[in-house]
Length: 449
Image (cartoon, rainbow, N blue to C red; front, top):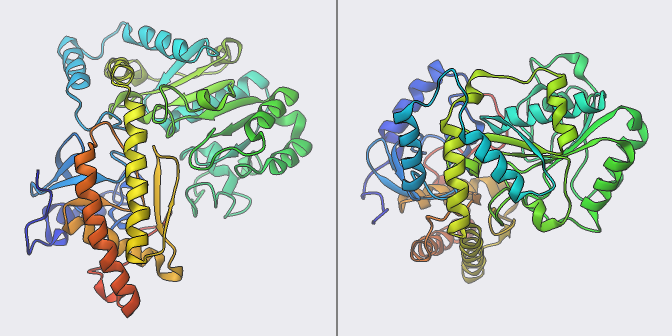
């Protein structure tokens, strides 16, 4: 398939951008998810909306196809968009009635599958999004320990328990994936209830433990996102949780299922007390799961954790079908191989053109950056603009999927080489800003007016 945008076409004048301008008059912030704001990629030029998606191709509102080399549904569609087997299972579920007064049998099958994959876990509860599942995990931990304070590392959603960290110091969440998150609307009484520590900085957690040992309800963190744990970091955290009686919660929403079949903690050799999954669990259909030790999970009955749409059948049905596909196709192996190809290609293209690139992350969660000083975000914006003109959605990160095949990666990297050469020329001439068709992309949280 030819992904190149027709000559003379300006995406900024397309139907998607027109619709987005309308959306901003009706929807505060323009979108429901910060990671889908067009301003994060190419202000005024990002297609913004889609008509259909299949595999790793997205057609915009004007039926222009783009190969997706960004996050592929913000990490949800590990099999690729509209996987036919998962979709068929969901279609059958819908035809039989996806909601009624009785319970969905697929949720029992899913619970048994999740516990079989994670032998340390005994019980499961469900939600439909990662953010609410994280809130449930913290509620369960607080109910089990009868304590209130949470120590955390990384990004864990929009809930009050998490944003409370920014009530004391507005930059407390800086360095935890997203900076500048405004805690407006979070009660001031929650100040001091959530305390951050940085990955691989065990001394920071030890300081929290020393000050709040008897009050610590939970230690919440991603076992790994980009950096590898150093010097027994996870083992030391496990020991601190055991010593204090705090519940260790692993957020596997982003990392889960990509590098291996299950939570990435399985490859790291440290088991939590609770683990949370969403995103890739159900290949684009809303589903989230909290799994854990039986005694800790039973605390869900000591508090009120209940919602009508956590009982619909589409989510569990999609998850059962997705997990079967992920295992049968050895998807994690393919995803890692594709990630290695792309990271290697970025590095080689940068060296070939003398462009200072920064390549990082694990193969299943690739990161691209430009080490060009103060104008690095402008350079990334220009990269996105020029890749878009060549039929590729591309920015500072790439989450490979099963739908990304080596031949498409070759075409992508050919386009990357062309654009890297162009970026180098503009850097040498000092014309990066003038080469942009619009403003520089935003980073982190910013209010839209």
